[in-house]
Figure (tube, rainbow, N blue to C red):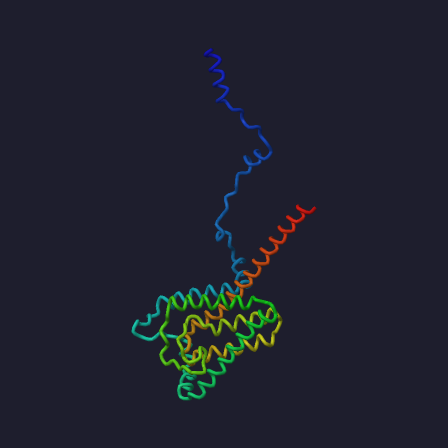
Length: 268
């Protein structure tokens, strides 16, 4: 009896060795290679290739190093002093001109309001008349986000602000500085024009947008950062609106395919 138990136990614990296969043999002969870090494989030829064919990232790499030096050596603006804005420095001549000519300031403000009306009209036209809602969706995304950010960090009104009753918002009511809805709305309209190959109209809007930005700096109606982020916001929310439309098309396609499959199952 004891001999039988010991024999069974020995059989249970002694597992047969795996039968060698070609894959096992190859793994035993060729172990997994040890990869070197990527930078250890770089050569001078690689560096020259990057500098020639990828000069844009190289340019921004130099910009990173330059502004790291600027940032860590620049004296910060005291909390009691007004913000420093390079756009205000550049447009000081225009600010002095508009401050001394209220009628000119009102005229330019009125023309700017007309341009805002052109943006709004075009964006609504693409949806209500042409049946293409992307620009309208982008504007809704953009202005809602602008409201959230503008309320979250309320920047002080720049010193020397030159308001006008003909400006938009009309009547010198309060408004959010960050970011510029004027600029972002124009970018959204311009991008839609380019998609529809309305090149002349797009370039016209871009030129008017540039003039609008210079005027806003000259009147101290926006900081430079408001205008720069306005351009980025227009591009961003136009892209998000496009992704939103694409996702809805995919969902509609899936639902349509599923419903057609169900009908075929019920009525083969």
